[in-house]
Amino acid sequence: MAEEGIRSILVADCGTVLTKAILLDRVAGAYRFVARGEALTTVDTPWQDIILGVQHAIEQIEETTGRTLLDEQGALISPEREDGAGVDAFVGLVSAPPPLRVVLAGLVRDLSLASAERAIAGTYSQVVGLITRDPKVGWMSEEEQVRLVLDRNPEVICLVGGTDGGATEPVLELVSAAVLACSMLEEDRRPSVLFAGNKVLRERVVKAVGGLAEVRSADNVRPEPDVEYQEGVRAELEALYNERRLGRLPGGEWLQRWSMLPLAPTAAAFAQLIRYVWYLDESPKGTLGIDVGAAHTTVAAVFDGDLHLTVRAGKGVAFGGLERLEEDPDSLLRWVPVSMEPETAREILLNKQISPWTVPEVAEELWLEQAVAREMIRDAIKVAEGGWSAGGSRLYPHLTPQFDPILLSGGILAGAPRPGQAALIALDAIEPVGISTLLLDLHGLAPVLGGVAQLKPLAAVETLDGGGILNLATVVAPVGQAREGELILRVRIKYERGGELELEVEQGALEVLPLPMGEEAILELRPRSGIDVGLGRPGKGGKQRVRGGLVGLIIDARGRPLRLPEDSEERRARMQQWLWDVGG
Image (cartoon, rainbow, N blue to C red):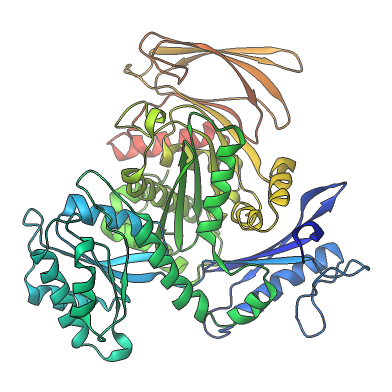
C-alpha cells in the first residue's frame, strides 16, 4: 500500500520480557494513539514462537476497542476493510534476542580500543572479553589471547589497532592469535572476524584467516590519533545482529510477512524518535532519551543534529541488578531509603531475574528495583558520554551537558506508582543542569513512533503532538559553590490563569511547586552571584515560559555533582525525605 493510503497502523514491540502492541489511527482528522495491548514475549521455551506473544497483545487491543484485527487463523487482517476490521500497515520492532557476544582485540587502551568499545555500545552487542597489547593495562601473550577466546566463546572477534598507514606487525600478531583460536574451535562455533584497524592490512587479514572463518572489514575506528569513526563497526555489527538474531527469530518469518518494513531493533527506532524531538526546535541544548528495559538500557543523545546511541545490553532492571550488586553493593544500596542487607537484596534480585515479569509486592522491592534503574542509567551515561560531541551544551566538563527535553521510557519509569518517583530516579541518575523538561513515555510509544516515522512520518508527528508522550516536570538545577542551607536562588512563578508564587531556595533543597498539566506559567529566576541556572552565565537571572506536568515544577538545589551523605542512617533519611518532597 502506498504511504498516502495508510490510515491505521499497528506496531508490535517485542522486548525480552514483554511484547507491546500499539494501535494508531486517524481520529478527528489526525493520527492519534488509540489503544495498547501487552503480553509475555514468547520467543523462548516453552513457546519458541514470537508471533504468539504478538497475537496475545493484539487480542487485548481487540477486547479494548471491539475491533477485529486478526482473522480466524490468527493472521493479521491487512489492509483495513470497509467494516473497520484490520489495519493498513504493520511495523515490527524487536529487542528480545540476546546480544551478540564480542571479544575485542586492539593495541592501545585509550585510543582504538576505546573507540571500538563506544562503537560496539551503539548496538545490541556485549563485549565479553578484551585482548590488549597495551603494556599500561596488561600485555597479553598469544597463549593468553587464545585461551580468552576459547573461554568466552564469542560470536565475533573485533580486531582494531593502527592508524591508517601506521602500525602493522603488532596488529598482525593479534590477527594471528585470532586465527589460531578459530582453528581450535569446531566449525559451527567459530566466530566471525571483524577487522576495523589499519586499512592497508585488510587484504593481509583476509589472507591470514583464509576460509577458516567469515571475515568482515569496516573503516578504521581510529584512522588518525585524534579522529574517531564508529559508523563502520556499528553497521557491520547491526548487519550481523539482523542476520543472526532477527533473521533466525522463532516465528520471525510471520512477523516479517506482516510488516511493511524489515524488522528493526527497538533501540534504533527509539533513537530515531529522539533525533526527531531535537529537530522540533533545533535547540542549542542537547536532547536526551533514556529507555530502561528488563534486559537493556538505551541512551540516545542528540547534539546539533548528530545522534549518539548507546545500548547497554544485559544491563536492565531484571537482568542487570544482580551483577551490579555483586560488583559494588554499596553503590546500589545507597539509593534504598531503608536498611537492607546485601543478602536480602540478592534474594530479591535473583527472584526478579528468574521471573522478570513480576511486579514488586512490597515497598522494599520497589525501592530496590528503582535503585537498580538509577545505577543502570548512570552506568549507561558514563559509557555514552565518552563519545558525545556536546559542544556548547556542556557548560562544565565534569557535569552532565545541558539537555532539553529529556525523554524517559521503560516500565520502571512509566509504571512508577507515583510520577514523582520517576522524576526522582531521573534526577538522581542523570543529574541534569540548568533548565530541563522531563517527558514521560507512559505507554511505551517512543520506539513505536520512531519505527512508524520510517513508514508514515506524519503519523509519528501528529501522535507525538497529540499528547502521546506526557510532560512529567520542568526542572531547574542550579550549579555553583555554596554551603548547605545558604540562600542561592529566588523564584517567582506567575501562572497564566492568574496568581503567582514566590520561593527562596537554599542549597541542598529539593522543592516542588504546583504547575498542573495543561497550564503554563512565566518562571522568573534570580540566582545569587556565582550560581548558574543555565541562562547564560553564573549569577544571571531571567524569565522563561514553562509548561505544567504530572509533578509540576521541581527546583533541584541538591548540588552538582550530587553527593549523598556518607553516614548510612543520614543517607537513608535523606533519600526518604527526597521521596516525600517529590510526592513519592
